[in-house]
Image (cartoon, helix red, strand yellow):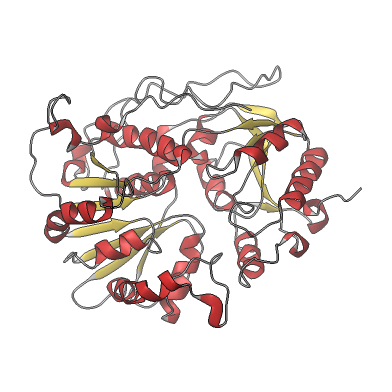
Length: 429
């Protein structure tokens, strides 16, 4: 199993507040309050903040050189005797980012750091990419202990009141919902957090309580004690994300959505990703993208492993790109029992795939990448194929919404080839 290199970027490198502590590097000059505050909790959210800012520039700048070695760890250079000549994927020209209409210096990206080590590692590397673009980064150990939430929210109250625009990546996050109660921003922007965006838009349009699709159980037992206690904050966040004559709401997404009246939609075409990376070198093999459907309690583990084996056998897959939340024991079974090379990328897959090498065919279960990879790999000749989740794979504890939601994710993937159901069905022999 291929593991990413040890974290090469420490928290001090992405947190100007930490740099003021004794023994830290020199403090950055004070540039005043940020016009835009962006809150991210995952690498994909941070990527999509960069995409959103890129889309706002009247003359989008070419991305600057990337930090040395940032993209060299975590993904093996797959051998391929038949591949075309290598193409340069690094060494990108620099352009002053102030040439566009979006001033990076007026934006602060706040990382609300999670506990998961794989997510933290990817976030650190994405933070370095953001710094290379000229953004100010603030790394918050928001979950670092009993007093961390109070300290984090207290420290952000002033910047939140001063910001004219707030960008968020996860409207379902209780942390983000709490922060929204403090802002006076006249512009709110929601950037993609993957397929969860589809559920968020539907719940906002229907005036429902915000709850992640895989956590709702239905009936009177659908809400836990914490959900009930937090209900007023969730209701306040829903009101904040409903546009009115004092506040605009924008949705920046690559997902197929029908927004409520008044919500502006901007298409996320992953233009920054295509400009910054690639085109990739292609191999003649097939790659398979993993999901965390087992870890979230939706799909039975044995059925999932059977499905992976069947897909790998039928389509000749040799590598398995693990989701950052996949369990290590499960990945060992995929490597040892199924014989696939397991890769744990240290950046979002859209960037890894764009850099290459990548298979000429990429297989995936229903997930965000069946919508984003066709955009990131447009014009490269890569085929992205998605297989349905058979209802027999679902656990007894899966949300009643699971089957319909997963089917909608698959069916609405406009740039992906949909495999016949029998191709997705696990072999029982």
